[in-house]
Length: 198
Length: 100
Image 1 (tube, rainbow over the protein chains, first blue to last red):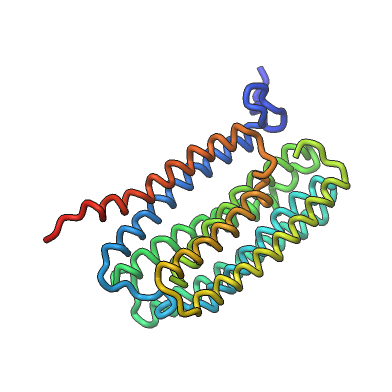
Image 2 (spheres, rainbow over the protein chains, first blue to last red):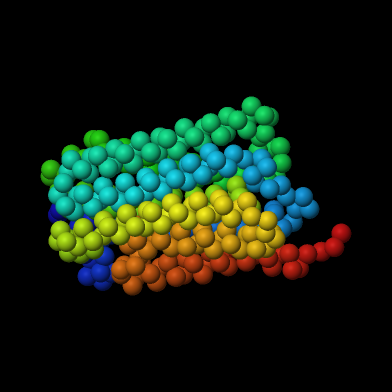
């Protein structure tokens, strides 16, 4: 009996998809509900509050705008790394995936600067309801960023050995990692105006 | 994508770059709009509309939903319905608030 996981490359006849892509999309569907519950929490807290501060009066909008630009750029380099594998150009893949990982590091550094500034001013999650939901949402998003960075760094480094032995399976892995990464970008696209600008 | 000929990939890459430019422009518009003197309802509506357009661009082109299999679209349709139901819960709570 073969020990290989089935349908990592081949298309399953009943779903018309390989299991990598379907599995990732089902996971992302559960992620939508996770963030959905927290967004609902945000709405509940905001509409129930008599005095809700404007995000830009407490948070650093220029830094968050820069982080938005960094994250969107990382989404493009991610999709370009996958397109490079389709073109059988491994060197370009390494370049784009490396750029993606570096951009993630930049995002996390900027986020750390933001958090440090808040703590320096004695602004903690316990300070106000607004800061509580701000830290909850951005920290959960930050954990996703760190998770995505770990996977991308693995696929750039040791995991890239698979390109020589099973290129199609490796390409599918990068595509799945890309789907997750674009989701992380998508969540930030909503978090940015909701927390910083409204 | 099931077939990966060079011309098709080149076309996709051009699309990625166009979407990237669009996302950058919309990010700047989002920030600019936040400085306008709008009512809360208009400000929230406009910011969420721009975010929805940006999110759709990412989902359709970077995540390739624009030419994805129906099974995935069906899964996402249910996800969106449940997501909207969850977002509606706070509104329902407010409509049934008890005066203290």
